[in-house]
Image (cartoon, rainbow over all chains, first blue to last red; front, side, top):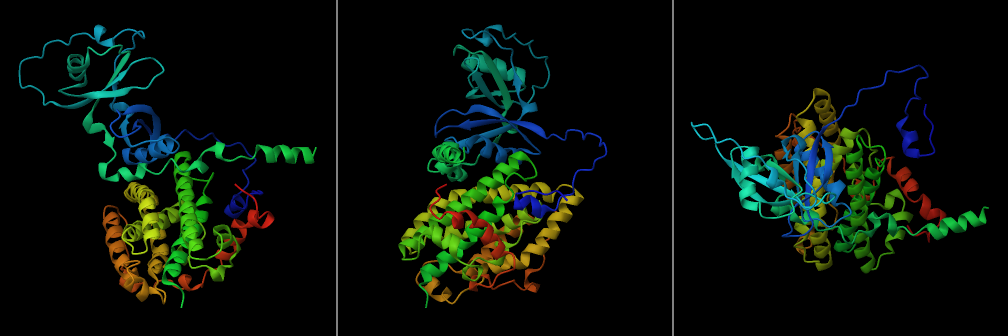
Length: 207
Length: 250
């Protein structure tokens, strides 16, 4: 049996790893989701990073732990990575809207249903994509064209992300109190554990 | 006769402390990294809740929170037996978390209107965290309770095993009539009813079946100091550092 100084491990009664060769297991990864947070009420949502999760609901839980545990946060959105469309990147002082090709005029026929798309701008490389607003559009390409009309005068815009609002899981307004507890939890920060002087003293005594 | 406020506080605080410690045993051993962090973080929340409640007891004349938490023997604890059971497999710990936190959220929501204002204040402060704990529990019970046969079987077994203990969350003490009469708390019967409605609603969205609770005898005794063989070893392990150095600050 596997022995350990950690009583929790000892209690698990784990078998020792077999000595014989074992096939290496395949990676079993979840889908990725992208996470946007709101630092305080009224601030625009901005990108914080991805999480792996088996569903949007679980992604939301993981996002809360991962990205709001040690930072002020008043709301969160998660969206499957596969639901985001993005433009090419341009230089830091430029606008990607200047190089967006004008889509071909729509073929005559029944117009597609339009729906809400959310638009995110990146102002500078290394910064976070930030929500600038929503447009009504029939496709991601159409949404970019609408965004160019609505937000094209903002610059610089190094890169644009577009996603259907329907693909975004948003935190509920009535649950806003789940975000309100962080500031007084200093014990969650490594810096709150002042042990270096004790370690130094221990080393001195035992050197 | 014990002060009804103290009677209630000891039950609330001991539940939080013991389950917080139990759940912290998953730290580093969780099924996946993100869930490990989430579960450990909630365990830490529970220890924080225990501290706030022990602080209220201290204001009422009881010993310092650390003394109360680390120097009593099992027979002096008022937690229900549900919280002291070993962590088992993840399905067990998740199911216990689901059943316990649903009761806690309702309990603290009701306590926000307590006539005992310091407790009402603490309840208002903790409510947001408990809401998140319940959101976490519901999400996993729905996710896994509608997934593979293996997951459903494990969760059903965990539900069957934990339910008799969970029903004893609502074990009453001799102070119950005074607690209700003085407007400190709505009482265990009212809480149990709301709890059953809430857990039934979530479980009905899964392949899991809630056993008929009218045929189950709750495993009571915890509120009166009667505990399983598992509590004393937990207390010994939890108090190990305190006993080595009661002045240790960490």
